[in-house]
Structures are given as structure tokens and as C-alpha cells.
Length: 256
Length: 226
Image (cartoon, rainbow over all chains, first blue to last red; front, side):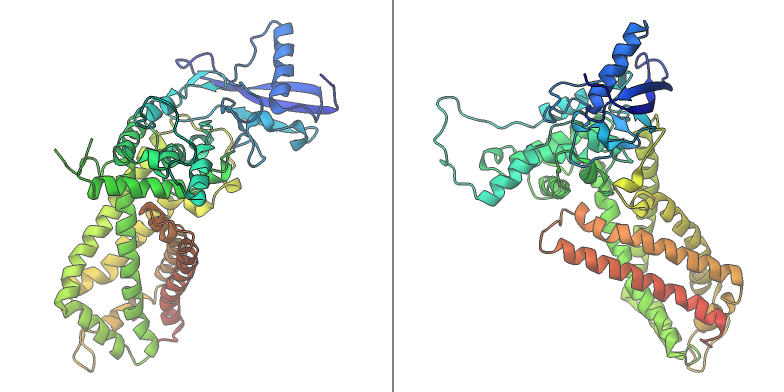
């Protein structure tokens, strides 16, 4: 890995397990290249810690190309750091200055307990999806393309909602730790397509109920989630979810 | 069996209560502001007292007063509950939060702004509502209407009362700047054609209502309205 000229002070949240209290620990890093990604900078730190016999910092990462949603660092008070529309793995050290102090914390929410250091348990999202984020399809051969006519605008809108990678930045940045942007994206990607109609109103009731059961906070429409979402998921999805939820409760005769 | 279930107790239901009561209170503010603005006729309060007399005697307004108090209570209680529930949703706080990077400070401070308004409301209701409904307005004007205007003029001779009212109206302005458009979003009324109009109207509404209310005590204290 190329060396560079950046000297940094890192304040990183270290926590042994969900049962212990954590604290911010200072680390000095020198000769960091501005071309490194934020996670590569962490790799350098961990190499140093390992060679010194210290325990490396545990953090989530997988694809490192901004599409898997695994990385989850709260950097200087913002999820995925200072840049817009990127995940932590796509954030580069050139976005910081030589001599900077960088504070790195895990996502913080009751529904996202810390497993270790910067890794949190996001299985609450999986349980919300399992509660209703599916459609019924017939077995057999796949249908011909365009068998079901879907207007382009609607297909695009559903696709934009489907861009959600489930990273949890919306929960992390929301002052209420609300998961409504995530849940509304997962509802909207199905609610706008014909395939999603049979379960539409049951789905919104089940997924909202599971979201509440997981202990996420209540949305107060601050819009922070939309601003910080690396995939640009829109608040329109939350309005659509609200609409579908209210329809399901006050218009539909079906209830879960 | 079909039922409304958790329609109001779910996270979306709680928003719904805030949104509906909020919009109702916004409509009340417009009526309240219009009646109060009658003091600007500056005829010794005769027109204003006529308006106040109508509000105090019309059966529909009296019935709505009960709805208003219920709506106000629901908005306050639900709002306070939401503040505590939402704080509990993040038991360990962040060391560093850069809130300004992604949202407006007043959107993040609705609980604080609401609490300032609640304190103001206690003073305001005991100043005027308790007097006009319970303890009684002491004098009548030339038209033999209860002279609420005189009560108002007397109250706004004290500097700290005027300052409190002006500060509360600043809080109201920011509370509405978030609340107006937010209520529509909660009801699911997010639309590419209408939402920009709602947002723009909400900004104008918040500023105009708050300034109109704020200049009333100031104008009386300064002696422009007699």
C-alpha cells in the first residue's frame, strides 16, 4: 500500500462486547496516503495494532464498492462520513486534511446493539423484511418480459426504492433512531409494482408492527435520513408508507 | 376480526395524532390571529371587543373551544411522550453529532420549542382565557360589550410579559416552519405538484402569523394601540 503524507489522530469507539461499556480511544496514524479509502486506513491501523500485539478494531465491511451495505461507521458526527451519496468504503482520505482528528463511532440505536467496537447487530432489519417484504409468485417458468405492463415512471420509482442497501445510516443519523426510511423503501419497492399488490396492505401493517417491536424510534420528519442516505432514498417513500398504512387501517377491512 | 388495531398506537399512528392535531391548531391560529388583528383598527378596542363578544357567545365557536382544548392536550401529551420515547430509542448517545449537516435545527428541536410554547401557553391562558371564561372581565365598553381590550392593554404594560410573548412567537414561528409541511408528509400527502406549494405556503404562514402576533403586545406597550 502506498504511503503518503497525512498524519491523523483517530478517536475510535472500543467496546469488548454488548455487555460491557465502551469508550473512545486515541490512536495516532502517520504517513497515510490521501488515495486510501477510509477502510484501507483502518486496515493500516489494524496492521499496526496486530504487530504491537494489541487487539485490532472490529468493523463491518464486505464488498468495499458501495453496494453491499455492510460498512457502518459514524464519522465526525455523520454516518459514512462527510461526503454525500457514498458509503464508508467509498470515502477516501483525500476528504480529510493532514493533522485532522477523526472521531469514529458505531451506529447508535437501541435496536442496533453493539457487538464489538464498531460492529453493530443489524438483524432487526432482517426481521422487519421477513415480516412482510416478500411477494407471492407462481412456480414454473419465468414470464416473458413486459408481460405485465408497468409505466416507466412507476418502474423507475420502485427501482429507486430498491436501491436501498440496508446499511442503517438512516437509523444512525436520525435523532430518534427511527427506521422509517429503510422500512418505507422496502415497502415502496413492492407497493408500486403489480406483483406487490396482493400483500400490499398486510405487508405495510406487518412490517410497521415489526419495526415498532424492534425498538426503533418514531419519525419526526427531520429529513436527516434522506440527506445522509448513500443511495439517495427519498422521503416520498415514507409518505407512501404512511398513506398505505392509513389506508390499511382505515379503509381496508383486512387486519393482521 | 377487522379492527383499527394499532392504528393510533403504532409509530405512524403517533405521527398521525401529532399531524392532525397540529393542522387543527394551525387553523385555530389563523382565526385567533384574525380576531386579534382587529385591535389594529385602533378604535379603543370597540371592533376587537365586538369580535371577542362574537367568539364568546356563538354556539359553534363555544363547541369548538372544547375540541380545541382536547386537541391542544392531545398534541402536548403525545408530543412529550414522543420526546421521551425517542430519547429511549438511543440509550448510548454519540460523542459527536453534526446535525447541521443534514437537517434544520428547528426540525430537531420541536420538543424544546414546544416546551417553550407550553410555558407561554400557561401564562397566556391565565392572562386571558381564565379571565374571560371564569373570573370575569371587569369592565364593559361603549357598546356594552365585555372590555377584553382593556384587559389586554393592562397586561401589556409590563415589560417582561411583552418579552415573553415575543420570544414565544419566535418559538411559534420555528415550530410552524417544521410543523406545517411535516403534517402533510405524515398524512402521506407528498406529491411532486403540491408539496412545493405546501412548503412555500407553510413558510409564509409561519412567518406572517408569528410576526402579526408578536407586534400586538409590542404595539400596545409602545402606545401605538390605545
